Image 1 (cartoon, rainbow, N blue to C red):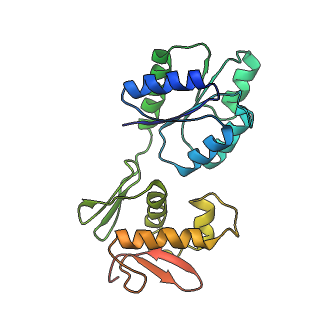
Image 2: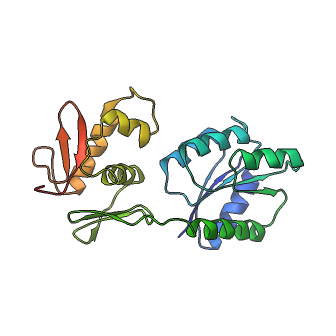
Length: 227
């Protein structure tokens, strides 16, 4: 089920689009502020972002730049601004498409489908396999010994980041910056809590680690058990 994020401050438009897309089989989230949208985009797991430019807290053009600096998720700008210069600027700043209000739900769906077809034509990442653990970043599914792990969005992001660097020690500082998008020097406790929960879901503990090995004073690494 494709996951769509709508960032739109007009409640009526936001609800109308969310209702239409949900009815067409999409998983839809909607937010009314630009900064909330940027934060959600940073968490990953989205297929397309629908972004209004006239937002209450930050201009949509700035929100677009922030999203593009942290994510490659396709962005469709949906706005009443129809000046050619504005459209050209937004596309050059990283938007994948631009639709001018008013527009129908069917038109927006067609644009979403076109973007997803283009995205599907790109390189597909194969699942990372470490021992009996498999992490599929394309489908956002992780399995252990064939059983699907029940992970939150951030737990999956953390596991995927470590799996893609299997055997390499990753510092908590790096995890904060790359997984949580927090500045270097943030609180390590956030990472510790998520690692603790992730260990439990992998059937291990810090004292009896299998996949997640702590290198004291350095960081954490994901390894094949008994390697």
